[in-house]
Length: 109
Image (cartoon, rainbow, N blue to C red; front, side, top):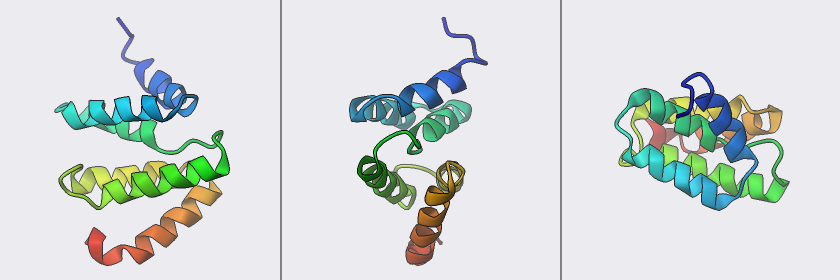
């Protein structure tokens, strides 16, 4: 069994180093989980990583950010945390997050 203090590290860096199939698996874990702490763990792991190619990162960014405005997928609080996780991954993600939020402001509120 995985030690609880290692779980966030393994998910965050493990998903960042893998492909779209791993991200889909973590997304399914997020959707099926009812434990708030685990849901946040999965959201943070899904935030696009810095080490993927620029085009793949852009595609992940758009897909992930569009999920945040769908209240059937995540709560408004989880959406804000997801945006924070992405914005915290680097300057490019921060800029892209700002553009997304300003363009989707009506959908977010």
